[in-house]
Image 1 (cartoon, protein in one colour):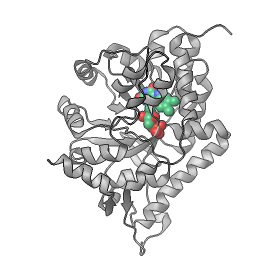
Image 2 (cartoon, helix red, strand yellow):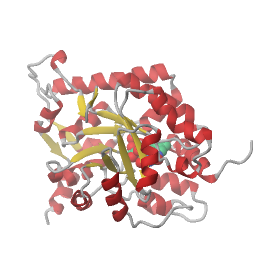
Image 3 (cartoon, helix red, strand yellow):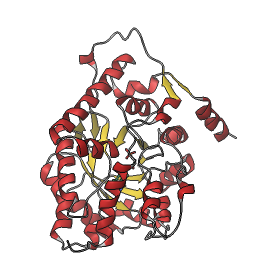
Amino acid sequence: MPKQPLDWQRKNEHIFLAEKYYQPTNPLFDEIQLIPSSLPNLTFEQVKSAIFWGSKVASSPLYINAMTGGSPQTILINQKIASLAAQLQIPMAVGSMSNYLKYPNNPEVQRSYAIVRETNQQGIIWANVSAHTNWQNAKKCVDLIAADALQVHLNSTQEIVMAEGNHDFIWLNNIQQLLEHIQVPIIIKEVGFGMSAQMANQLQQLGVQIVDISGRGGTNFAQIENTRNHQADYSFLQNFGLTTLESLLETKPLQKQMTILASGGIRSPLDVVKCLVLGAHAVGIAAPVLHILEHQSLESTTQYFAKWLQQIKEIMVLLNCSKITELKQVDYRLSVNLNNFIQQKSR
Ligand code: FNR
């Protein structure tokens, strides 16, 4: 087989390495304990978990986060993810569309993204670009897949560890341009290193209304890029960044001003609910979807995640909540570590 361009190979290597390092559980979520209700006083049928995204409705506050596209090998994966999202009626994001912008006339690269809208015509689909993509190019990405929103990823740590990384992080002006010119909602997202209150606040001041704090604890791009980097060792950055729970606690005071989405290391329906209790509007999963698709058929993957949607509602019964918004009233306790983290914040 002829050698593929480096930026196609990278997409394939990300999938391979995310699976190689995949952990099916995330002990960091044990750092919060929800206080259950042993007298729920409601039935499962009364629990409503659907949420609105603009004028479209999702069946659950779960979404499939950005992963892939941009190489011939990713066409089938994105087709399966799109079919899964359509069956479950939940939003999905495509992975970074930088390869579409770099190889606009390559039919396979284009198809790796376009297949998603073809497969899931009515669904909620989000485009994904890097923070230095100009608005004209970002618009091309949105148009290709008739995206309902545009995710803009902040991945400075990943770029630093990546041997071929781009080290120009002057992004704020461009984000402002994107906000001015792109017609669909913009979601500013991390890629697994979390967000501080200070950062979310800065974005909010700029006019950003939705952030995905995507914290540490799941897919680790410091680890993935360090494995790919044969020129330097960056293993010291493997625990860099804020965890998903730390990021949620950090940004909690901003929830009235902006929509906070949570992702990063969500590995069970209980992890999803814990993020909702901390005020996340919705919760994203990336690697778990790849992992189950890798080991099971599309049909059983769909059944697997349909069960998650049911289990999210079952946990809501145990917490005596019939609506997602009621979850914010649920009482919880934090570990000594997390409590200490919050205490230091108010110094
Ligand atoms: C990602 N992620 C990602 N994010 C993004 O904004 N653009 C991208 O192109 C990619 N690519 C990508 C590839 C693969 C294989 C994975 C697993 C993930 C990051 C993803 O959206 C999410 O922020 C993190 O993966 C954390 O979630 P999980 O994987 O721990 O559930």
